[in-house]
Image (tube, rainbow, N blue to C red):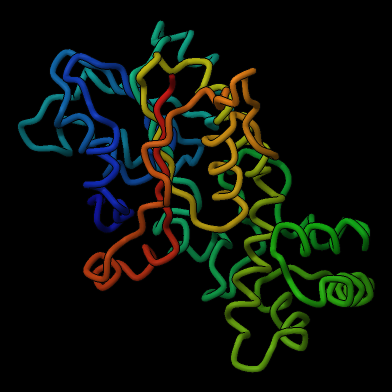
Length: 313
């Protein structure tokens, strides 16, 4: 499976230039996916090291195939690359295990890969009538089906409102709880049939996307994991080390923006006696970098991407 078939790396040149890569440095890609960003980092390393994380078994299979000499022609497996089959919320423990602390830079491309979206059986996309799964790590127990069929009405309302920012979240939650007593809600079509009446005319696909986003965030505890990642990344980065993060929706971007500006997830940075900011970061990007028209033309999914960069002081 080639990189382009698996996942097209977004904002690739901006990511690599923002990392300010040292040939002998230690770098981390916490979202390996199709490996596009990782391969670009490796091109800039000589004696350096790259540790790549991914919790998705498909991504790790792809990574192992690409590093296998039989799959890469005459290339040998790259001994500069260490693959870690875990969620990035376990960043610090794994870096300690590989004696890779401190690091010179970290890259995170949050969200769902093209491969995951294009796999009907994974349940991430609204385009397919697949089962309600949505697990990034397929060894996890909780699925979107279980959320929909077992959460209390108030739990559903809250996650639809907070994670999906959906209108009519209360009515949708009530309808789901009523209907599931008659018949289990097991597939994407089952859920969309119930939800379509709450969507604005002409905005049905957007409503479904927000609904699926809410379920995916809950199933994978994505915002909790992101908070853990950001806090641990600050601890393991060298002074002068860069953190480069691509977010795909406002909930992620807000957390990243606030943390880069203040070292906290809410509120402004604390200030010293003289009024100087006590943020642990220097902002490299005051405003997020977004894909240009040419990139969006070749990869329409890039449209929602926002890249932020900060340097540890």
